[in-house]
Amino acid sequence: MPSGMLTFFRLNSLPDSLLLATLLLGAIGFVAAVILFFASKFFYVEEDPLIDEVSNCLPLANCGGCGFPGCKGLAEAIVKAGSMNGLICPAGNNKINSDIAKLLDIEAVASIPCVAVLHCNEKCNNASVKAIYDSAISCAFAATISAGKNACPYGCLSFGDCVSVCKFDAISVNSETRFPEIDEKKCTGCSACVKVCPRNLIEIIERDIFEDCNYEACIKLKLKKI
Ligand code: SF4
Ligand code: SF4
Image (cartoon, rainbow, N blue to C red; front, side, top):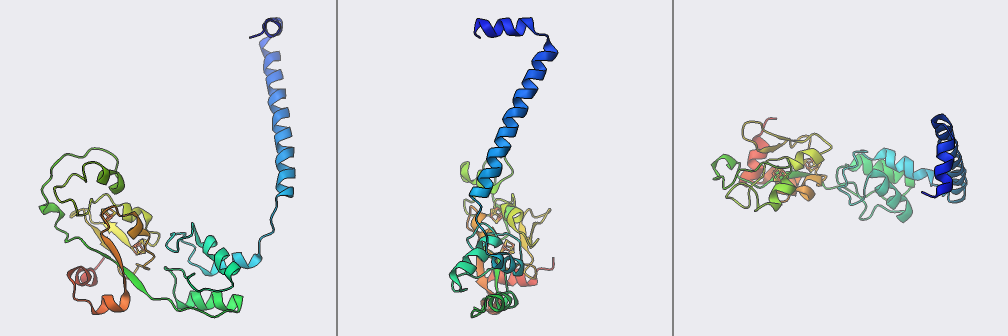
């Protein structure tokens, strides 16, 4: 510290130093606030009010299934494109599509109702355990450590990454089997769970196909009473 400043602090009492520091911080805060105020005025971009109106038609779950960070991102893309082609909420339905189409006076695009199906034979308890895992409660993390604790390198890791991303309360991990169960009545087919599963165990299937399907995973899901 320069000798001049040392002398200054020695000559002044502690309360005076505190007062100086407070005044300095206050002045810096004031100048920063003034800069931010003018910057916000200068860079202000007026938003099309239709974006909020379209956004309010969407489920507002911000599940990210559409590929945008949230519902507002999809709403903005639809308004800018002036069309819904390729811009559909995967968790939505035809009522939502027609509300948006009416609002923007554009042609509605039909949704294909879907459901998530889990491809693991629910025999996790039969898989032999090759190691004791004592780390982060995360499927993504566990999968990076020697492909998980079980000898089966394909099966469910049971930490519920899929559960935590589901905004529709449609998956839960069964406390006895430690296996995720999908409530097909609540599932919107948004695909958020598909994206996070490190084992690629979840698939989105069109509901028409699902209803007629005799594949074991679909039958199990249809029979499940959650
Ligand atoms: S189960 Fe998966 S696809 Fe179904 S609503 Fe939840 S996150 Fe979306
Ligand atoms: S289905 Fe995938 S994300 Fe869900 S608990 Fe199993 S391994 Fe984890």
